[in-house]
Length: 485
Image (cartoon, rainbow, N blue to C red; front, side, top):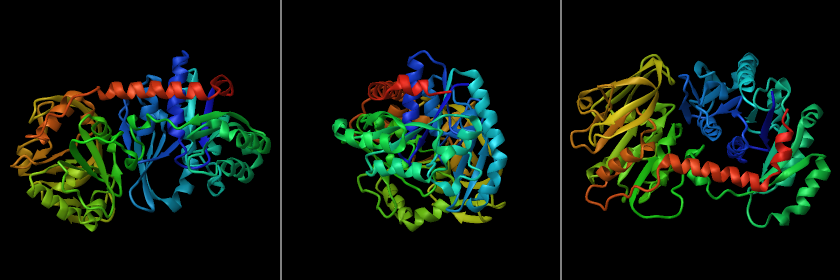
């Protein structure tokens, strides 16, 4: 069962992208390869072919492998609902909601599911490339660990340690990680990779040799900064970029505190003639915004309070008076209504929260969670698109008589009487190039037509191919893949 694990000296060192590049490079070499992440913490989830949910990063890695995403690729997904608690999803299904302080007691029960999922993937493929979480240097979390060295020891998987030179201090990252690790964990590391280098990598030759000499680990290479990363789906909402500066239709998305499933924005950010702004806490809504997106949230009522605290409720009302368009997706759709009720306390304390009142609908949270892939037809343009639903709660009211879309003949979502405020539970709609162009032209009525440009899915595929070439050209992949066992 050959496998290799990429762990990092810290969070955001580029593990997810390295794994995606290695997966595509291994596939190009004719290997059947699959991604695996024992434990992920993210509210950006993907609906899988087997009807569950996994982290969006693992769905992209599956695409790099030429595979449909399945729940075994990310058996434990933690979805934060507050600063101290998270929903625990195991093999695609919600298990419980727990406080961070209590999660340690739960982890030993989860190792069986983690190893079960890993075993199935390993038996079905030539190679499994595993992504760690955080850092093995977090020795306070080592007991009961299922995300890094605890998993690597239990599954007997060799480890490559990745460090981020762009943030500085990479020598200390590497040497310090080894210094604090238990000897048996340090012995499992078979080498390291330096990631995100800008400039001439030869300038780091002395530092590279110092790490090798001090740790006894071999280096597998220095990977330069990957300039095409903006073309790949972002793992963090604040990383979403429109790429090179451009003018045109201005789409603004509210960066909610518990923003979820923000992959809706990636195709918009890459569309020619569209610029996307992620509006951070404390910032006012720009007066030149054409479309404001209120995105999904893992805590609808909590983010309603957050939205009001930023003054965005006032900004949205002014934006509508100016004739601007507003689209609420999933939790954002719920916020646009008159009321959000959670009588059972599913997302937090039981109670009701007044909505923004921009749509005449009322939402009631329910215990059942809808997880499904969906084909729909947009009512206003007649364009079909594929998407997915991943939500709790149902919304009803007079504005639902003007649906946003139709799914299997039934009405879905709601639109205000003037057509400027729209709500839908459907994620992923903007991946469809035809629908995206038609929708944007409708929003920008009276403006120059928004050009179509390259297809989004083709752009992601091209970026994955470029990423594979990038790691192939800069890392010793023959040695790295040979380290798998």
